[in-house]
Length: 162
Length: 266
Image (cartoon, rainbow over all chains, first blue to last red; front, side, top):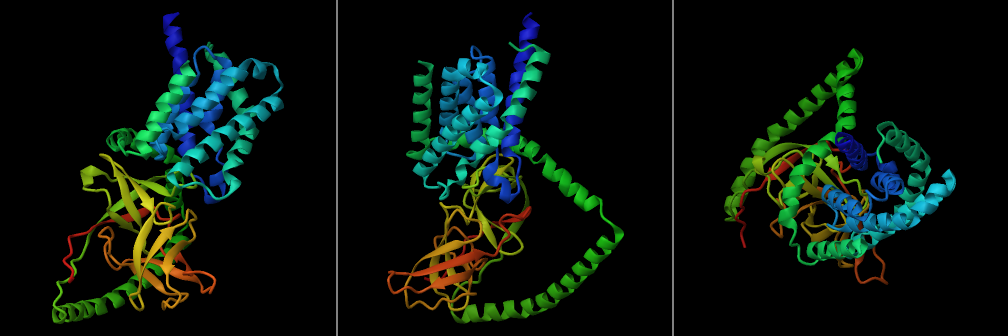
């Protein structure tokens, strides 16, 4: 059993790693603003699926990692992902029983909050966006949610991560 | 409880980073880990670039070859004059009793990542401390000035572009030497030139070059071309916008400039 536990941890880590890579892949200029918040999506999924394993501290560590990679203020993504994980932990029982599009609506709100927090901290540094385009990732992330959910659920069942 | 602890940690991080800059050392250590991840994230772009150079038709190659030949002829034609101009320049400088400007050494670097955040105009280069890159070093592409190095780690460095909202560069109008400061706006397309008096001689189409004041950037590299001048009597200063000449969102190979200390006449 011990070996199996180890194995399943790797699945979670691997998905987070892929999400980080996707968050850094260069995009054409017209798509820059709409980049989905991959890390937030994957974090939300694992928090709903395994709230006893993935949660606030996971969000904190992932956030600091993303901050270093993005060259953002240390703590920016750490703060927003912590809040996202915290809210998901409150909501996970509700999200498990609602249908796909209601879930997507909640993801829209969660990623929207994520974006607002990031924007707020960037404001402290004086590099904030002057448009509301920074909310676009909330829409693109919500649209991607069904795909993420199915892919990660298949992965979780296949490797029996629990 | 966990939430409170996390928020506490995050608050300390943000304050330490924003107010006291006390995490710069930690950051440059952590950045060593960043280079391979950026390299990995850059793989799709590299594959496209590879297929672009390797899968080409003969006619395209011939056409390219022709174009490059013409360009080469033009450039070597122009460089013939440069020798004479340099000699003349040295003579004139001797007359003015100021020391000669030294030529700058350059290092070719390749882009391995761009900031995923659209409001942050930063790039990651594949050269670091090992190659002698230092904080504050200027970099150019074939057209003009791109920006400066803000963080270095062993194998990579992070660069701030001149269009970033937190960046400003001292410039002068190439035509008449009027000095100004061009600030980034967060938009890739233009810089704002601040505090230009209403009577200043500056026109659309003027080339702005780096003035070297402030000691950060080397003198005389093209920065931007003035694209808009609005003289509004209601404003204290003239509104001047300029578009950068460097291909900020397209350059893949850039040159890092090693500026040598320059003695200028006071």
